[in-house]
Image (cartoon, rainbow, N blue to C red; front, side, top):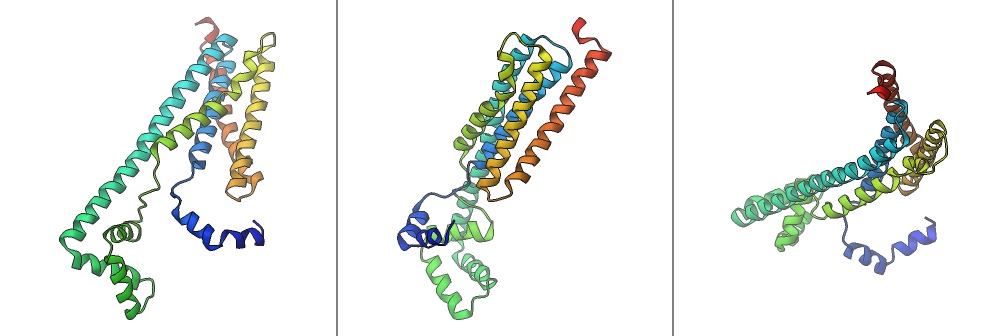
Length: 250
């Protein structure tokens, strides 16, 4: 962001626009989580079945089945986890509202102590307490944020689940794409799958780095290393089973 952009973002109109917009957690975390896990899960199936020397059609069927089932499972889990955080905030809000209703003097003392710890003098504290406690909604929101470190707008279960599912399926299908092309040796298909998966990991990491204003290279290498470790483990297990148990003869 340039200095000119910075000044533009701090015009009164832009400030009011940002403050009026609904805040909350970005979908970036859910997207990255779904994308990385999608690639790892599907490529683990590809690596394991290739290491076990299973037919290409088995790789495709198992890969697609795992892709959809795991994407759904992960999306539901993310929804339930995010919804639980949202319900925690709702329960805390009801509890704080009840305390304010039943014992306002004690809650006023808590507001005073919260802002006293921020360094305000007595005269300023009197004004702060008077302003905040004059509005029940503001009072409750302040207690949630300052006392309990909770935000009422941070959790969005449906968006979290949707972002996770789409990213999981979108990135998770990458390792399977080469196996949809007939007429090639399985080793060549696996090599292509590994290459595409590595590229997908790198692109996902680069994108995350740019969005978070972190080193794109470092972020890309982190995701690539994580995916590479999972792939090596899956391939090793498949190869070990093939050599010791004789998967092809089962």
